[in-house]
Image (cartoon, rainbow, N blue to C red; front, top):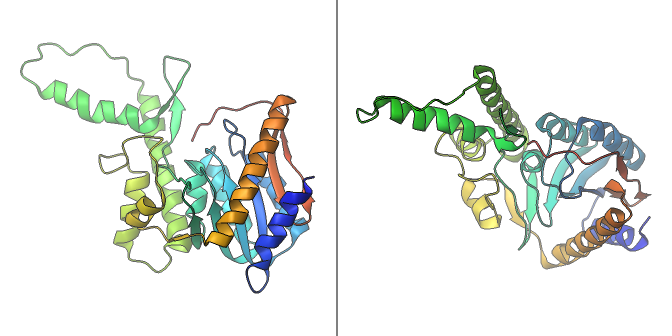
Length: 282
C-alpha cells in the first residue's frame, strides 16, 4: 500500500465540494481489461461505498469490450455522476469506458483512441484490426474484380466465418458505443451527433480513423464531439503525480515478475493479480 498515492487521492477528493470519491484503475501495458476484473472492481466499489460522484483515474491500452461495458455499468451503480480522468493513455476498450462518463477530463498528454476491434489473423499467429480485413475485401477485391485489365484474380484464401466474426466484432463495438454515448457522455444530444461520433470511432467505413493507434488528444476529442473538459492546473498536478507514482510501481512489480492491475481508493490499495499476460484483443 502506497501512502503518498492515497494522500493524493484524498487531496483530489477535497478539491470538490460534496460527496465525491476518487478511484484509480491502472493497467500495465499489454494487460487486457477482462471479465474477471469486473468482479474485483465491484468488490472494491462496495468497500468504498456510494458517492454523488466518482472520479475514475483510468490508464489502459484496452481489452475486452464486453468487460469494459460492464465495468461502466457497475461503476454507475455506485454514483450519480461519473467523471473519467485520463492522465495518459486510455485506448480502445478504455476509450469505450470513457464514453460512459458524464465528463471526460483530459490534460496535455491525455490520449483516447479508436474503438477498433482486433482479431486473430486467419493464417498467422498475429492480431490484426477487424476493419483491415473488411477493408481489403470490400475495397480492393471489389476494385480488382471490376477491373478490365485483370484477367484473373490472384488467389486469396478467405474464410467466410472469419469475415463474419470481423463484422460482428465491429457491430458489437458500435452498439456498445452508441448505448453509452446516448445514456451518458452525449445524453440529450441529437442522434446525428451521436452517430457521427460512433462512425468516426468504430465505423468500418472510410469515415473512421485510419489507424488503430491514432492519437485522440483533447483538441481532437472536442472536434469529434465528445463531452470533454481540460483538467484545471491543480487537478492535473495531482493526477500527474498519481500517474507517475503508479508507473513507478508497475515497473517495480514487473521487475519482481508480478503482473498486477493497480486498484486504489482512499481506503487503500488492493491490486488485481494476473496469472499471466494476455494479448490485447480490443
